[in-house]
Image 1 (cartoon, rainbow, N blue to C red):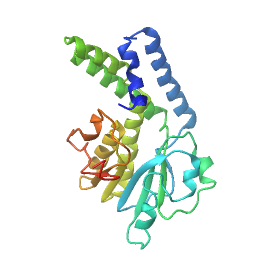
Image 2: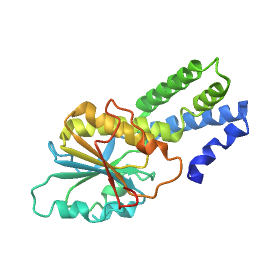
Image 3: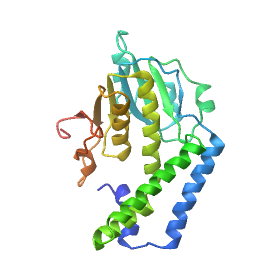
Image 4: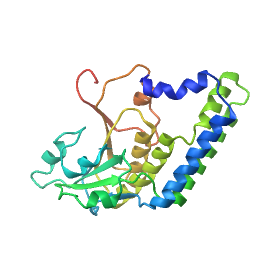
Amino acid sequence: AHPSSLNVYSDYFKKKYNFLLRFKLFLKDEVYKFISFLRNEKLYFGDEIPKKCDVIFITHFLNKEQAYHNIDNYYGSLMSELVKDGKLKLMVVLKNHTWVTQKKIIKKWNSNLFCKIILSRTIGFKKEKEIVNRLKVSGKFMKSCFQKKPIEKNIALFAEQFSTSGSSKTALRMHEQIKSIVKKTQPKFLISTFEGHGWERLVFKAAKMENPNVLCIGYHHSVMFPMQLGLTRKYGDGYDPDIIATAGKIGL
């Protein structure tokens, strides 16, 4: 029930199912595909990925200064401590919240204590188009399932309209990116920040698809909000973390 999350639903309660809203969302999809064509990025960039690693940490790239030091906003100095004795091979995967490019980062990229890579915001026109098409199919499927139930029908219609939202595209994009990384590195552990977002579930699923034996840990680092159902709901089939770690007793 965080206000920034609830804002998404304001149009639903106002019943703004109009042409302008649909056209706005259509334009966003097309603009994103155009940006992906111009940027023509690979799945990720940064250090060379090792053939094997013990632990993958998934955290957040909030500004370009983060690329130049080894203290993380969410895990602090934990990663640096873990690699001190040289026994663990560790890599850090940064979910990209910026539009920084590889050229701008690598020029000043410091030698890190561990492998560090940043996930690209786009992954090429062809794959971005595939992601949008997959989400549209899912949206239409949801709408078709509830045609004869008035309340569910309205909710499904709303979900269908927003099926290609930015967060939805990010979730499927990260699924592709993490699958590729886990396939190459075969880690024993994967640790991700965990607040109940869809992308987190797809990260766990991607890891399990490429390495069924990987232990997935969701780190809940923030406060609990009312109605935060996505955090504790069990989906099964590889979408759940094996362990949930908290920042303290209140979270636990």
